[in-house]
Length: 208
Image 1: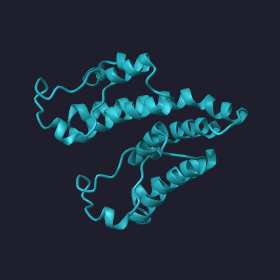
Image 2: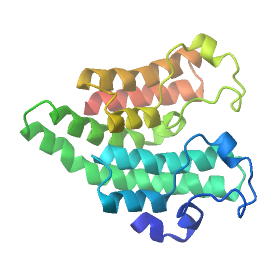
Image 3: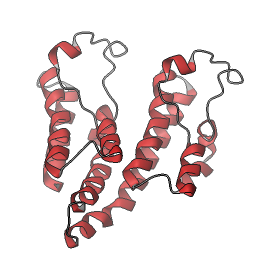
Image 4: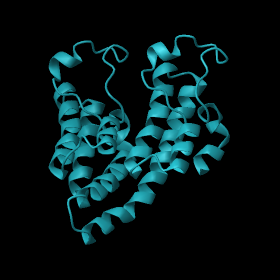
């Protein structure tokens, strides 16, 4: 709610209209459109089964905006800024869930802990390169998928928590570690992304 009230949130409050917004190729490039207005409506209807599900759609809103609009575009910059603000707020809201999870029993206890941990990790300064899938073409690394056979990123992991395809705490931890391992494998020692991956791995292990 607070996010939607920000002045820079205006472009994300309703679905993109390819005609009115003069971007006829939008739905060709964006596989699954999302916006904050749709997220708000789904929250009101109780469509989301948990916090990670809603978080994933908010993240998708900003990921779509960053993918469709180049880095220098105002919409791209606003998406980056809003995503950072959202993740800070999300992490703050989820921190009590980690403590709550320790007091719970049953098979779903790990999901609360995972959601809290992911929210915390994703807001760290070291996390920015790992929030979305690597776009090999856009990032100028066409050989990426030949080197990295099992890509993973924090946004994809958030969606896996949402849709239930992440089945256990071990699978969750392995996915976070895979994000860091892939970055360290592809980027040589001393490279900024390698260094950030090392930091992300350390922060995750310390909190998990």
